[in-house]
Length: 217
Image 1 (spheres, rainbow, N blue to C red):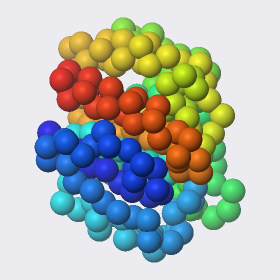
Image 2 (image 1 turned 60 degrees about the vertical axis):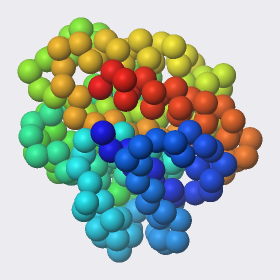
Image 3 (image 1 turned 30 degrees about the vertical axis):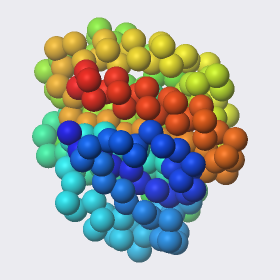
């Protein structure tokens, strides 16, 4: 299983969870302009070119929630019908404020409108939730996790946070794997703005999620 670390801020410079992972690929995108919260066309083209060697399979750490739109670029690589499971304290389905630019707050809407293989989105952490057992088993899943769905006991993010515990999330992830194929997983919600204050707890949570996912998926 490949693991990709996408460095968009200094967050991962202060963490160590990924340094002993085999087949771990580091993509340092910090010098690319036009990426914070919104992804301009030139930056989008640049990052897509960096993702060419990789498939949607595996575990992808994509830094702060300000860059959750990177999930869209991974979903673009899925070439079979699938469902998206989203853990997030925000639905990320808002229309763009200007133009058709990709954004951290609208990437889910863009995905549903532009990706023919994406059939359904099931969101946990905001709004009405479908029981996990009701998610059909006939299509594989891609899972996207924003740690802002977690309480501040388990993550420090750049956004207001929910109250889900890490234990609850792990239990839900375990349920999702029953009789379902998991294509890939991405994880954001690190603290870029306050990287030092969130480094310790985020490092621990990232390590816990990686260990669980690599053992169960």
